[in-house]
Length: 260
Image (cartoon, rainbow, N blue to C red; front, side, top):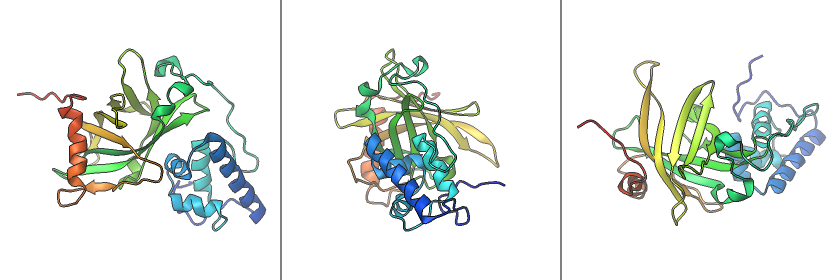
């Protein structure tokens, strides 16, 4: 049987009784409290809507298998009967390949970020979405996950590398050997990150073409949300988003070299 990991799948409920559903909800609330993360952060990391999570935790709807699989992956714990949490690995220090940073030394980077880059499909337009960064205990490193993208099938999940040598922050996705990389500055005084994104853009037909673009991230306050999706010049928040993105290049956080 093929499972489609969509949080609105109606026919894959796995909670056999109200008691089982309540127990799963209790475990999830306990993990949220223990890790000191918000429900919004968990929803972002699990790539489900906050509404879906809230309704399941309140007992207003049953957990679907798709939702549970995503939550288990995000938390690194087994929530269903007969499943077990992954064996613990690592610890409080990231692998040397990621910069050997400690958990306590990078808490300042954790949070939700409004993320802006140029639109690849609309000339002159911008593209905005959310990036959540948090410590992943089972992997002993910072992880990141994108959410709120109108092209949700391309949302990225990966690890954060922070080597002392360059002083930069790297958001790295490795999917079966296919890499996508964002290189970012350390946060400015207002908590923003600026840099460059290297990825693959959909070209003619099914062809994927290497692409690079400036990238800007601004940390959001608790409960704050931004305007997401395609942002065009006729929208009221376009100017602010464009000024935010321009800092990546005008502030010399990143350089795009083109042939004269």
